[in-house]
Length: 483
Ligand code: ADP
Image (cartoon, rainbow, N blue to C red; front, side, top):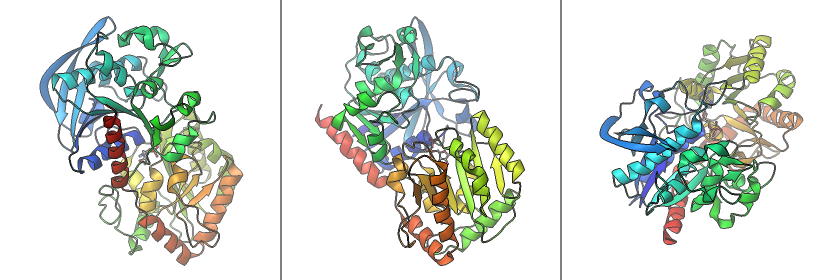
């Protein structure tokens, strides 16, 4: 079975969040299965070379029509790391400091950039005669692909041999652009209506992917249910509720070759569920690195996240004074909305020996925080999958999470005696609910023997991709059976 993954970001080449983790690791897991032939396509961003990757030029050039204009696309490729990744290169669109926009605002030409990318992908499939059975699209940047595969890059028609799967990684970002821009797709006008891709007079790329693909998936089972409700459906809940069995939730996994404290060379000391001494070294080294005093009985709470409303920064702001009335240390690593940068900075100044703040995107530091923390705080308003809680558990850092989406599905609430469960979950997006959960965690932390057992339980949980990879293969097989 031949699968082509198409995504706007793939690790290790370029990333802004969880999407890149998934497109970086799921294809790898699928490629290990018998009879699976996997390759990927992404834009050739500035970041690719910056991170030290040197894809090679295939020499293939494709003329890509975007409305009345035509732009040449270059096809580059690398096999390291596997599976094979093709890059669509056009520096005018992708050789920029950021992927989607500056911290102030999105790039004005994002619709054009990703229409170009998707059309170049269709042309690449034909030019290289890739003949994928399934094109697996991810998020709004690839939402128009099912239609472009059907109609071709000029909109004049194409014999589409391939089937499509569309994965929603985060419904909150839909790629909505003015209806007047629809012309640059060169697609027939017949899709511009309520049951197609039209959304209050605009083009909605996410909606295009949902309506035009053969199957829709999300990245956890609970999120698949939640997006059918008004509270989480971001205006598309009605459409999603009508999909029935076309919509499925498949929980994201972890690549334990990359996330294993027993052989992680980037952390201060190695440890595993049976040998926890190294965890203590990681804690102390982390505290020292960030200029915090080391105190054994004072738990370190880590938070590694986009600093946004979605990630619960508002809730944290409402609770921060009460949190700091407890004997805890808080480490925050992230980038995001300006108001939260300001707030975090201020907290760091107010409690300099108990709060450390790094306003940065820093993967090596993220690992050290995961390894050195006792608790990982994820008070997300909604959370399609969440990956940090999975990494944290493997590194003996106990998740404290809002009971939503993928967090619901992957964290088991610790029972009253502290003898079962893998973390702490609070219901209701209220700061007193979060504080009550924190108090429960702190009470258990004061019982070191019980806490060690909790760490062991969390570390032994298995969220490897293998199981989810089998679910995807089953789904692909079903899709192909309907051909
Ligand atoms: P989302 O994709 O919604 O941002 P996820 O939890 O699914 O959230 O994935 C985010 C990924 O990005 C995690 O692997 C997390 O550790 C990482 N990450 C987020 N912010 C930072 C940061 N500032 N520095 C390093 N890694 C980060």
